[in-house]
Image (cartoon, rainbow, N blue to C red; front, side, top):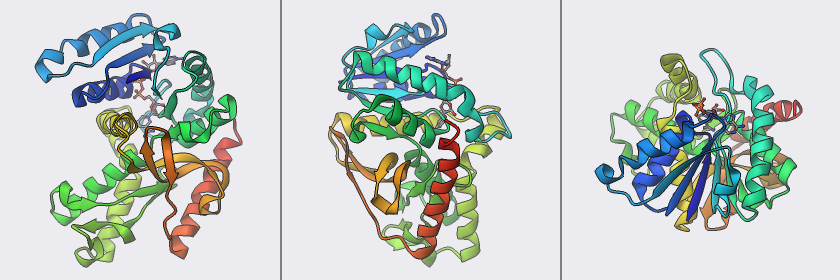
Length: 306
Ligand SMILES: NC(=O)c1ccc[n+]([C@@H]2O[C@H](COP(=O)([O-])OP(=O)(O)OC[C@H]3O[C@@H](n4cnc5c(N)ncnc54)[C@H](O)[C@@H]3O)[C@@H](O)[C@H]2O)c1
Protein backbone atom coordinates (compact mmCIF):
# COMPACT_ATOMS: atom_id res chain seq x y z
CA UNK A 1 0.00 0.00 0.00
CA UNK A 2 1.57 3.20 -1.24
CA UNK A 3 -0.02 6.52 -0.32
CA UNK A 4 0.94 9.91 -1.72
CA UNK A 5 0.05 13.06 0.19
CA UNK A 6 0.39 16.26 -1.81
CA UNK A 7 0.96 19.30 0.38
CA UNK A 8 3.34 18.76 3.30
CA UNK A 9 1.77 21.61 5.26
CA UNK A 10 -0.25 21.34 8.44
CA UNK A 11 -2.94 18.93 7.21
CA UNK A 12 -0.72 16.91 4.86
CA UNK A 13 1.95 16.28 7.51
CA UNK A 14 -0.65 15.42 10.15
CA UNK A 15 -2.29 13.01 7.74
CA UNK A 16 1.08 11.35 6.96
CA UNK A 17 1.82 11.10 10.68
CA UNK A 18 -1.48 9.38 11.52
CA UNK A 19 -1.19 7.01 8.58
CA UNK A 20 2.29 6.04 9.76
CA UNK A 21 1.28 5.66 13.41
CA UNK A 22 -1.62 3.40 12.41
CA UNK A 23 1.00 1.28 10.63
CA UNK A 24 -1.13 -0.11 7.77
CA UNK A 25 0.72 1.39 4.77
CA UNK A 26 4.12 0.33 3.47
CA UNK A 27 5.01 3.75 2.08
CA UNK A 28 3.89 7.36 2.31
CA UNK A 29 5.28 9.90 -0.18
CA UNK A 30 4.91 13.52 0.87
CA UNK A 31 5.13 15.98 -2.02
CA UNK A 32 5.27 19.76 -1.80
CA UNK A 33 6.15 22.57 -4.18
CA UNK A 34 8.27 24.35 -1.56
CA UNK A 35 11.92 23.31 -2.03
CA UNK A 36 13.08 20.84 0.64
CA UNK A 37 9.94 21.21 2.76
CA UNK A 38 8.47 17.74 2.21
CA UNK A 39 11.93 16.18 2.57
CA UNK A 40 12.31 17.90 5.95
CA UNK A 41 8.86 16.88 7.18
CA UNK A 42 9.44 13.29 6.04
CA UNK A 43 12.82 13.10 7.79
CA UNK A 44 11.38 14.55 11.01
CA UNK A 45 8.48 12.07 10.91
CA UNK A 46 10.82 9.13 10.18
CA UNK A 47 12.78 10.05 13.29
CA UNK A 48 9.61 9.36 15.30
CA UNK A 49 9.35 5.80 13.89
CA UNK A 50 11.40 4.07 16.59
CA UNK A 51 9.61 6.10 19.27
CA UNK A 52 6.09 5.56 17.94
CA UNK A 53 6.69 2.00 16.75
CA UNK A 54 5.81 2.12 13.06
CA UNK A 55 7.45 0.63 9.97
CA UNK A 56 5.81 2.79 7.30
CA UNK A 57 8.49 4.41 5.17
CA UNK A 58 7.90 8.14 4.70
CA UNK A 59 9.77 9.94 1.93
CA UNK A 60 9.57 13.59 0.93
CA UNK A 61 9.96 15.06 -2.56
CA UNK A 62 9.88 18.53 -4.10
CA UNK A 63 7.39 18.43 -6.96
CA UNK A 64 8.82 15.16 -8.33
CA UNK A 65 5.73 13.23 -9.38
CA UNK A 66 7.76 10.30 -10.76
CA UNK A 67 8.37 9.34 -7.10
CA UNK A 68 4.60 9.07 -6.54
CA UNK A 69 4.20 6.45 -9.31
CA UNK A 70 1.82 3.53 -8.67
CA UNK A 71 0.27 5.05 -5.57
CA UNK A 72 -2.84 3.20 -4.42
CA UNK A 73 -4.28 6.30 -2.76
CA UNK A 74 -3.41 9.97 -3.36
CA UNK A 75 -4.49 12.69 -0.95
CA UNK A 76 -4.62 16.30 -2.15
CA UNK A 77 -4.07 18.84 0.64
CA UNK A 78 -2.13 21.39 -1.43
CA UNK A 79 -3.42 24.92 -1.46
CA UNK A 80 -4.02 27.81 0.89
CA UNK A 81 -6.01 27.45 4.11
CA UNK A 82 -8.42 30.11 5.34
CA UNK A 83 -7.50 32.87 7.75
CA UNK A 84 -9.81 34.09 10.54
CA UNK A 85 -12.99 35.62 9.12
CA UNK A 86 -12.66 33.91 5.72
CA UNK A 87 -15.06 31.33 4.31
CA UNK A 88 -13.80 28.18 2.62
CA UNK A 89 -15.44 29.37 -0.60
CA UNK A 90 -13.10 32.38 -0.78
CA UNK A 91 -10.15 30.04 -1.41
CA UNK A 92 -11.39 28.92 -4.81
CA UNK A 93 -9.41 31.48 -6.84
CA UNK A 94 -6.02 30.07 -5.82
CA UNK A 95 -6.88 26.50 -4.94
CA UNK A 96 -8.74 25.55 -8.13
CA UNK A 97 -5.60 26.02 -10.26
CA UNK A 98 -3.46 24.10 -7.77
CA UNK A 99 -5.88 21.17 -7.43
CA UNK A 100 -6.36 20.86 -11.20
CA UNK A 101 -2.62 20.76 -11.87
CA UNK A 102 -1.85 18.43 -8.96
CA UNK A 103 -4.58 15.92 -9.85
CA UNK A 104 -3.47 15.71 -13.46
CA UNK A 105 0.17 15.15 -12.41
CA UNK A 106 -0.86 12.45 -9.94
CA UNK A 107 -2.97 10.54 -12.43
CA UNK A 108 -0.21 10.64 -15.04
CA UNK A 109 1.92 8.49 -12.74
CA UNK A 110 -0.82 6.57 -10.90
CA UNK A 111 -3.68 6.02 -13.37
CA UNK A 112 -5.39 3.49 -11.10
CA UNK A 113 -5.23 5.52 -7.93
CA UNK A 114 -8.05 6.55 -5.61
CA UNK A 115 -7.98 10.30 -4.97
CA UNK A 116 -9.03 11.90 -1.69
CA UNK A 117 -9.61 15.64 -2.03
CA UNK A 118 -9.07 17.77 1.06
CA UNK A 119 -8.25 21.27 -0.27
CA UNK A 120 -11.06 23.79 0.12
CA UNK A 121 -13.67 24.63 -0.98
CA UNK A 122 -13.65 20.85 -0.87
CA UNK A 123 -17.00 19.92 -2.52
CA UNK A 124 -16.13 22.14 -5.48
CA UNK A 125 -12.54 20.87 -5.60
CA UNK A 126 -13.80 17.25 -5.69
CA UNK A 127 -16.17 18.24 -8.51
CA UNK A 128 -13.26 19.90 -10.34
CA UNK A 129 -11.20 16.70 -10.08
CA UNK A 130 -14.13 14.78 -11.60
CA UNK A 131 -14.52 17.24 -14.45
CA UNK A 132 -10.82 17.55 -15.22
CA UNK A 133 -9.69 13.92 -14.89
CA UNK A 134 -12.65 11.77 -15.91
CA UNK A 135 -11.66 9.13 -13.34
CA UNK A 136 -14.49 6.73 -12.44
CA UNK A 137 -16.65 8.28 -9.74
CA UNK A 138 -15.86 5.60 -7.14
CA UNK A 139 -12.24 6.79 -7.19
CA UNK A 140 -12.72 10.46 -6.27
CA UNK A 141 -13.67 11.11 -2.67
CA UNK A 142 -13.94 14.45 -0.89
CA UNK A 143 -13.06 14.57 2.81
CA UNK A 144 -15.30 16.81 4.90
CA UNK A 145 -18.07 14.80 6.51
CA UNK A 146 -15.67 12.52 8.40
CA UNK A 147 -14.15 15.58 10.07
CA UNK A 148 -17.45 17.40 10.59
CA UNK A 149 -18.94 14.24 12.15
CA UNK A 150 -15.97 13.94 14.53
CA UNK A 151 -16.57 17.55 15.55
CA UNK A 152 -20.29 16.83 15.96
CA UNK A 153 -19.51 13.87 18.25
CA UNK A 154 -17.14 16.05 20.27
CA UNK A 155 -19.88 18.64 20.80
CA UNK A 156 -22.49 15.98 21.59
CA UNK A 157 -20.24 14.32 24.16
CA UNK A 158 -19.58 17.72 25.72
CA UNK A 159 -23.33 18.48 25.98
CA UNK A 160 -24.14 15.01 27.30
CA UNK A 161 -21.22 14.89 29.72
CA UNK A 162 -20.49 11.51 28.12
CA UNK A 163 -17.33 9.86 26.81
CA UNK A 164 -17.05 10.26 23.04
CA UNK A 165 -17.07 6.46 22.63
CA UNK A 166 -20.69 6.51 23.90
CA UNK A 167 -21.78 8.88 21.14
CA UNK A 168 -22.68 8.38 17.50
CA UNK A 169 -23.70 10.96 14.94
CA UNK A 170 -23.18 12.03 11.37
CA UNK A 171 -22.93 15.25 9.37
CA UNK A 172 -23.97 15.30 5.72
CA UNK A 173 -24.36 18.06 3.11
CA UNK A 174 -21.82 20.62 1.96
CA UNK A 175 -18.55 21.14 3.81
CA UNK A 176 -19.23 24.79 4.70
CA UNK A 177 -20.26 26.77 7.75
CA UNK A 178 -23.82 27.14 6.48
CA UNK A 179 -24.17 24.05 4.28
CA UNK A 180 -23.34 21.21 6.65
CA UNK A 181 -26.21 19.23 8.14
CA UNK A 182 -25.54 17.59 11.52
CA UNK A 183 -28.23 14.90 11.75
CA UNK A 184 -29.33 15.56 15.33
CA UNK A 185 -32.48 13.43 14.83
CA UNK A 186 -30.35 10.32 14.26
CA UNK A 187 -27.61 11.00 16.82
CA UNK A 188 -27.49 8.53 19.70
CA UNK A 189 -25.87 7.75 23.03
CA UNK A 190 -25.48 3.98 23.11
CA UNK A 191 -28.37 3.65 20.65
CA UNK A 192 -30.69 5.94 22.67
CA UNK A 193 -31.66 9.08 20.70
CA UNK A 194 -29.80 12.09 22.15
CA UNK A 195 -33.13 13.96 22.29
CA UNK A 196 -33.92 11.72 25.29
CA UNK A 197 -31.12 13.46 27.20
CA UNK A 198 -30.86 16.95 25.74
CA UNK A 199 -33.45 19.70 25.50
CA UNK A 200 -34.21 21.07 22.04
CA UNK A 201 -32.37 24.30 22.87
CA UNK A 202 -29.15 22.50 23.90
CA UNK A 203 -29.32 20.31 20.81
CA UNK A 204 -29.66 23.41 18.61
CA UNK A 205 -26.54 24.80 20.29
CA UNK A 206 -24.66 21.57 19.52
CA UNK A 207 -25.78 21.89 15.90
CA UNK A 208 -24.63 25.51 15.63
CA UNK A 209 -21.29 24.82 17.36
CA UNK A 210 -20.67 21.93 14.97
CA UNK A 211 -21.37 24.03 11.89
CA UNK A 212 -18.83 26.66 12.91
CA UNK A 213 -16.37 24.04 14.19
CA UNK A 214 -13.73 24.92 11.60
CA UNK A 215 -14.23 28.69 11.91
CA UNK A 216 -13.93 28.49 15.72
CA UNK A 217 -10.54 26.80 15.41
CA UNK A 218 -9.37 29.14 12.65
CA UNK A 219 -10.10 32.08 14.97
CA UNK A 220 -8.16 30.45 17.82
CA UNK A 221 -5.22 29.23 15.74
CA UNK A 222 -4.95 31.98 13.13
CA UNK A 223 -5.13 29.30 10.42
CA UNK A 224 -7.28 26.23 9.84
CA UNK A 225 -6.99 23.14 12.03
CA UNK A 226 -4.87 20.10 11.18
CA UNK A 227 -5.00 17.30 13.79
CA UNK A 228 -8.64 16.28 13.30
CA UNK A 229 -8.49 16.82 9.51
CA UNK A 230 -5.34 14.65 9.33
CA UNK A 231 -6.93 11.97 11.53
CA UNK A 232 -10.11 11.99 9.42
CA UNK A 233 -8.16 11.49 6.18
CA UNK A 234 -6.03 8.73 7.73
CA UNK A 235 -9.17 6.84 8.82
CA UNK A 236 -10.54 7.03 5.28
CA UNK A 237 -7.24 5.87 3.78
CA UNK A 238 -7.18 2.99 6.26
CA UNK A 239 -10.75 1.97 5.34
CA UNK A 240 -9.64 1.78 1.69
CA UNK A 241 -6.25 0.16 2.35
CA UNK A 242 -7.68 -2.49 4.66
CA UNK A 243 -10.93 -2.91 2.68
CA UNK A 244 -12.83 -2.22 5.90
CA UNK A 245 -16.20 -1.40 4.26
CA UNK A 246 -16.65 1.34 6.86
CA UNK A 247 -19.29 4.02 6.51
CA UNK A 248 -18.21 7.67 6.36
CA UNK A 249 -20.01 10.71 5.06
CA UNK A 250 -17.93 11.78 2.04
CA UNK A 251 -18.34 14.23 -0.80
CA UNK A 252 -19.09 12.13 -3.87
CA UNK A 253 -20.47 12.72 -7.34
CA UNK A 254 -24.22 12.18 -7.14
CA UNK A 255 -26.21 10.81 -10.03
CA UNK A 256 -29.77 10.88 -8.79
CA UNK A 257 -29.07 9.82 -5.21
CA UNK A 258 -30.86 12.13 -2.75
CA UNK A 259 -32.59 13.62 -5.81
CA UNK A 260 -29.36 15.37 -6.86
CA UNK A 261 -27.23 15.14 -9.98
CA UNK A 262 -23.92 16.48 -11.29
CA UNK A 263 -22.71 17.70 -7.92
CA UNK A 264 -20.29 16.49 -5.22
CA UNK A 265 -21.94 16.64 -1.82
CA UNK A 266 -21.50 14.90 1.52
CA UNK A 267 -23.54 11.70 1.86
CA UNK A 268 -22.89 8.43 3.70
CA UNK A 269 -20.82 5.98 1.68
CA UNK A 270 -19.13 2.65 2.29
CA UNK A 271 -15.36 2.85 1.81
CA UNK A 272 -13.39 -0.22 0.79
CA UNK A 273 -10.67 -1.34 -1.61
CA UNK A 274 -12.54 0.14 -4.61
CA UNK A 275 -12.90 3.52 -2.96
CA UNK A 276 -16.61 4.26 -2.82
CA UNK A 277 -18.22 0.82 -2.69
CA UNK A 278 -21.78 2.05 -2.18
CA UNK A 279 -23.62 5.31 -1.68
CA UNK A 280 -26.00 4.81 1.23
CA UNK A 281 -29.38 6.49 0.84
CA UNK A 282 -30.95 7.15 4.22
CA UNK A 283 -34.53 8.25 4.70
CA UNK A 284 -34.39 11.97 5.39
CA UNK A 285 -37.39 13.84 6.75
CA UNK A 286 -38.81 16.86 4.92
CA UNK A 287 -36.73 19.41 6.86
CA UNK A 288 -33.51 17.45 6.26
CA UNK A 289 -34.35 17.09 2.55
CA UNK A 290 -34.93 20.84 2.33
CA UNK A 291 -31.57 21.46 4.04
CA UNK A 292 -29.88 19.10 1.60
CA UNK A 293 -31.34 20.94 -1.40
CA UNK A 294 -30.34 24.30 0.04
CA UNK A 295 -26.83 23.02 0.69
CA UNK A 296 -26.61 21.71 -2.88
CA UNK A 297 -27.75 25.07 -4.27
CA UNK A 298 -24.96 26.83 -2.35
CA UNK A 299 -22.32 24.38 -3.63
CA UNK A 300 -23.61 24.88 -7.21
CA UNK A 301 -23.05 28.62 -6.87
CA UNK A 302 -19.38 27.94 -6.03
CA UNK A 303 -19.07 25.27 -8.77
CA UNK A 304 -20.23 27.88 -11.28
CA UNK A 305 -17.17 29.97 -10.40
CA UNK A 306 -14.87 27.26 -11.84
N1 LIG B 1 -11.63 19.23 3.77
C1 LIG B 1 -11.39 19.53 5.03
O1 LIG B 1 -12.08 19.08 5.94
C2 LIG B 1 -10.21 20.41 5.37
C3 LIG B 1 -9.77 20.55 6.70
C4 LIG B 1 -8.67 21.37 6.96
C5 LIG B 1 -8.03 22.03 5.92
N2 LIG B 1 -8.50 21.88 4.65
C6 LIG B 1 -7.85 22.53 3.51
O2 LIG B 1 -6.64 21.87 3.24
C7 LIG B 1 -5.75 22.75 2.57
C8 LIG B 1 -4.37 22.71 3.26
O3 LIG B 1 -4.46 23.26 4.54
P1 LIG B 1 -3.13 23.38 5.45
O4 LIG B 1 -3.57 23.93 6.74
O5 LIG B 1 -2.38 22.10 5.41
O6 LIG B 1 -2.33 24.50 4.62
P2 LIG B 1 -0.72 24.72 4.64
O7 LIG B 1 -0.50 26.07 4.07
O8 LIG B 1 -0.16 24.40 5.97
O9 LIG B 1 -0.19 23.62 3.61
C9 LIG B 1 -0.46 23.65 2.25
C10 LIG B 1 0.77 23.15 1.52
O10 LIG B 1 0.46 23.05 0.12
C11 LIG B 1 1.66 23.34 -0.58
N3 LIG B 1 1.37 23.65 -1.98
C12 LIG B 1 0.83 24.78 -2.50
N4 LIG B 1 0.74 24.66 -3.84
C13 LIG B 1 1.21 23.43 -4.15
C14 LIG B 1 1.38 22.73 -5.39
N5 LIG B 1 1.01 23.26 -6.57
N6 LIG B 1 1.91 21.50 -5.34
C15 LIG B 1 2.28 20.94 -4.18
N7 LIG B 1 2.16 21.56 -2.98
C16 LIG B 1 1.63 22.79 -2.98
C17 LIG B 1 2.26 24.53 0.19
O11 LIG B 1 3.63 24.72 -0.10
C18 LIG B 1 1.98 24.11 1.63
O12 LIG B 1 3.08 23.43 2.21
C19 LIG B 1 -6.43 24.12 2.61
O13 LIG B 1 -7.07 24.38 1.38
C20 LIG B 1 -7.44 23.97 3.72
O14 LIG B 1 -8.52 24.86 3.58
C21 LIG B 1 -9.56 21.09 4.36
